[in-house]
Amino acid sequence: MCGIVGILSGRPRLDLLERVHEMAGILLHRGPDQQGASGDETLALGMNRLAIVDDRVHDVPYTNEDEGVRLVYNGEVYNHLDIRRRFRQTHSLRNDSDAETVVHAYEEMGLSMLDEFNGMYAFALADYSKRTLYLVRDKVGEKPLYYTVCDGCLYFASEIKAILTQIEPRYNPQCRSYRAFEICCDRETLFEGIYSLLPGEYLEVPFDDISAMRHVRYWLVTDHLIDVPDDDAYIERELTELLEDAVRVRTRNNRHGFGCLVSGGVDSALLVGMARPDYLYTCTYGLGPAYDELAYAQLVADHVGKKLTVVRPTPQEFEAFRSDIIYTLDLPCTWTSFNLFCVLNRVREDCRVTMTGEGIDELFGGYHRYLLLYHDDQIRGIEAMEEYGYLIDKYYGSPVDRYVRLINRCDEPQDPAVRRYLRSTAEPLFDAAGDVTHGMGLVDLYTTMQVLLHMSDRMNMHYSMENRSPFLDPRLVQFAFSMPSRLKIHNGVTKYIIKKIARKFIPREIVERKDKRGFLAPLNAWFGWPTGGKYDRVAYRQLCLEDWRKVFFTGSGDRLRKAPRWRQPVPVSR
Image (cartoon, rainbow, N blue to C red):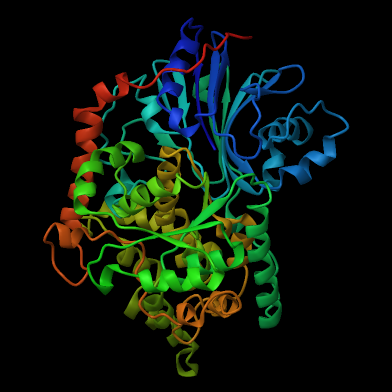
């Protein structure tokens, strides 16, 4: 994992490399092992490197033999060894890193290389022969990349705070995804003029005309569905092999021990059962069963014969860490991040790599809210109603309308702008899926799951650690939305096929749990909100937003100006 930054200027500027130093200096936590930068008066690139796959010192940014291609890179392409075998004899390979594989794969295949990449990555690649800069984000959105255009310059970085060393932050209260979901999960952010690259997207920017930049969505799962036979035995066998291989490719390139976070649910337990990590961690609050899954987590640890390290966060720690967490996240998210912040603070004592189970719920129908639309839709299977679909739609509304109502978290749910935004987000995915269960999962994959990935990236990177999510392997994503949806929800059981497979790897008591909770922090108890696990959503959102504004609009100037400097001088090249 790494942190990348860069500036492309529409007119010659002598200070680009100095500015890139400032941007990268604030992201040293993302790559404490090595720093490097290069640039001229038009384009400067910088990178902080976290050495996981290859722990030797490299020349960064990465280049091809004649330095006509330059790359700053964050993430990992897990199948890069398979790809580099094709050009091992035709290129001078200076190290074993997947970043160098990307450089030469681009020379051989151009951007069509992205179709073959299985990994999490965000990178900037400058092709000097074409005088074009490409900003690229991975297929599912595990690694972040932000950009803005200001005063004739394109600035980009792995985290927004790096961009804020160069421009003044401006609040964007009209951010549509935040108004609709309480999170930023689309191109627009709460910082006016600062945007996120979307999952599976690249930005093409000519050196000589930044205004001619072009967005290209190179991968959307609905454009890459595959043929899956409607055969239960085949699906179970193939899915099991895919799950195991997704775990395998995320462990084979690892020179370090790795840990897993265990919540006591099926997802993390299945990951532990398949991956057999070196370390296991969980957290508990000692506030009764609503916030305590320790017994289930211990059951998983006993099953694989590993010690379970238990972290017990306190309300005092929450108050002490609040501003640090917000600063780390860049954007208001959820206070689930407090759990991660505390647990990872302990994990870093043992290892530099973690694995987590994000994605199973979205891919395989795991959220209980899916049951509402799923069972509504069953009425269409009643023989007497076969000719009355129009009445069903009239009575219930369309599945898209119902799901939009269900996920709308706006203070003013009838706000026409928010409703239009939600519908424009959900409708194309429902239409492409052609199925209610698939449609709900696709919407969540490209919206609310993005904040889980956001938190995972920022929390791990804060501690200079790498997180891997095997269940978001693009092959699994394709398979999940191509298989019959009847195997996702069956007779009221969510994640039906996953639970069937999980019985081979984890204790039966975990598979048969009915009390799914999630990785919650007990803010409702600490703040005196209603009991019974119900949050005051308005107060919760306001708390997150106020903390964020205090950090980035009241105290951001001092904090950004005090960013650490580079640890070594970086020569100007090109």
